[in-house]
Amino acid sequence: MLRRMPVLLFVMISGIWGSSFILMKKASFAYGPITIGGMRLLCGLLVLGAIQLLRGSRWRPRGADWGYIAAIVSLSYAWPYCLQPYLVAHYGSGFIGMMVAFVPLLTILAQIPLLRLRPQAMHIIGVLGGLACLYLVMEDGHERAVPISALLLAVTVPAGYAIGNTLIKRRFTEAPTMALTTWCLLFATLAVMPVALFQEGMPSGDHIVSASAAIVVLGVLGTGAAIAGLYHLIRIRGPLWAGMVTYVIPLGAIGWGWVDSEQVTLLQCLAMAGVLAMVALVQFGQQPNTAHTGSPD
Image 1 (cartoon, rainbow, N blue to C red):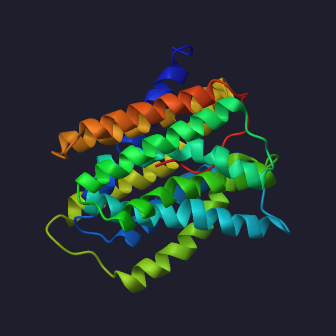
Image 2 (tube, one colour; image 1 turned 90 degrees about the vertical axis):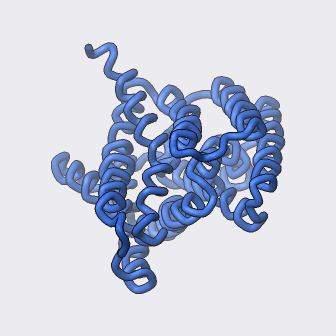
Image 3 (cartoon, helix red, strand yellow; image 1 turned 180 degrees about the horizontal axis):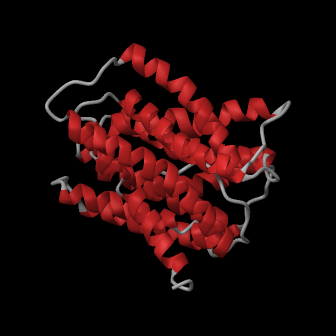
């Protein structure tokens, strides 16, 4: 049973994050996108905060850390957590869920100026191939009558995760990752929830019960339990193995979208297969490094 635990944990995390986009869609029937993002952050904070209290962790940001925390919270938490529900509600959970696959490739691009890393030939091939796949995604979006402005907004989600991940690697290599994530969730919640209450107010509609349940599952499992599980998986199997959840999340998003009667096109499948191949090319050709703290969903 212990030997199977990493595999079971991997399947659980992949399943939860692969389902996150359809849960955002169901939550949007009664809640606005900022409220969905804020409640998700709050529920995740409660889960990770409880774990931190039980562990007795006392780590906290200090000095210049706060500037990095502000940037990471803005790019990897507040912005994607509020934007994704908006995009999902308008353009489908499967289509928007595909964007997660671009996080590893965009992270390589972000590391060049921020960490001053010289990319390897395999990295360059992977990034160029990923950009070609991104063009296919754009073409697929054009065929679906998705405005170019919405497509560009969708790209900012993996870009934000990529920059946030790189800033973490630059500043917080020695910080306990779960404690760092808890602090980020705290400040993201404090930033987003007042805006949600002022801008969107109380939810309404016939779907409020199912929408509320979707938010709770999204926050407690998708933001709290899954992140905690990912860190445990990293400890027992390493970040490279755990990072392969990136392969499964978009596939889960597309699958749930198809179950919910969303259109799945050949161009979409080709783009998805291509970007996953590029991620595999890059990931299996590099050395394991520290994990990021943001959830890629």
